[in-house]
Amino acid sequence: MNGPKLVEAGKAILCIAACEAVGVLGGLFTAPAIATWYATLRKPGFTPPNWLFGPAWITLYALMGIAAYLVWRRGVGDIRVKWGLALFVVQLVLNAAWSPAFFGLRSTLAGLVVIIPLWFAICATIVVFWRVSRAAGLLLVPYIAWVTYATALNISLWQLNR
Image (cartoon, helix red, strand yellow):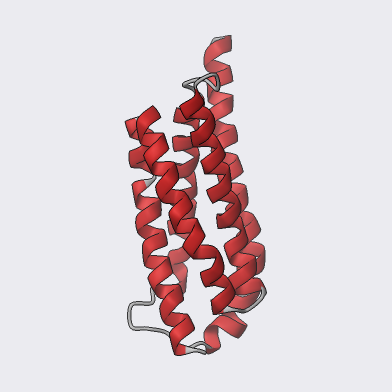
């Protein structure tokens, strides 16, 4: 692999690793609460099995990282790239905040306070990413689908357990 290709591979790995690190951080708050607090909640019929969350998020974080890389490689001199990456960071911070809010605080309401702006931030990121790289925008579609589902689940958990 020559120099420029190595640099590009490094950027891609950095983007994916940064996103996966958010997942690891979230897991620090999630894991202790699964068998304790979360197990005691009344859940709607559409609640997925606990084992599904890990593989789903690992995949979504990888797709997010690839999408961020595809935008970054277009060059930060482009204002759309700057806006896209800024929005990406905002949604990533909100994503990182959800697990401490929901599981760390053991609060379905705190989870809602985070996940609703997260949903809007992801939508804005998709719109800007799409304008820079259609592939990057498309790679975020499974993420917004999952967060839409997670929002519905969070709302139901809040309603059933208040």
